[in-house]
Image (cartoon, rainbow, N blue to C red; front, side, top):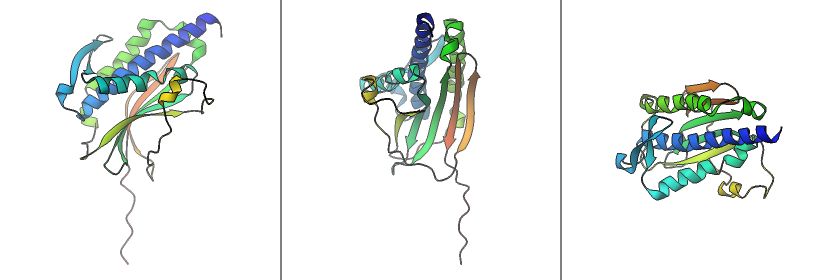
Length: 206
C-alpha cells in the first residue's frame, strides 16, 4: 500500500468513526433512555440527527467512537454494538454495526459517495422506532467493540480507553432483525438488531 492509499484508508476510517458517533447518539435518543430534552437537533450529512446536550453523555459517546479509530484503521474491528441491559446485567437489546473496510480499494471512493451511502443508514435509523423493544426499569447501556484479534499490548494509547467486557451472553442464538446494509468498496456495513430468543422449550412437569 502506498502513502496515498494509506491516507485514503485513514480518511475512510475517520468518516466511519464520525458516522458511528452520530449513529450511537441517534440510537440512545431513539430508545428514550433519556428525556427528549437531553438532545438537540442538528444536521449531519444533510440529515437531521440528534446531538446530546449533556457534556458527560456527549463526551462518553465521542470517546467511545474516537477510541475505535486506531483499531478500525488496522482492520481489527469486526462489530460495534450499542447494548441495553436489564437490571441484572443481562442484555435485552443490541444494535450491531458490522464493519469491514477494504484498505486496498480505499483510494477508489470519493468522499461524497461514502457520505451518500452512510446517510441512508441515518435516515433508516430515524424511522426505526417500531423495530425496538420497550426498555425495562433500571436498565443501562454501553458501547462494546468486538475485535477480530487483540492488538499488541501498549500498541495504542487510544486503546486504553477500552476495557474487556464482562457482558453476560445469551444461551441461545439471538433473534436478528436486519435494518440496513451496504456492500460496496471500500466499505461493507451492516446494521441489525439482536434480541434474546425466548422460544426455548420449557421442561414438562413430571
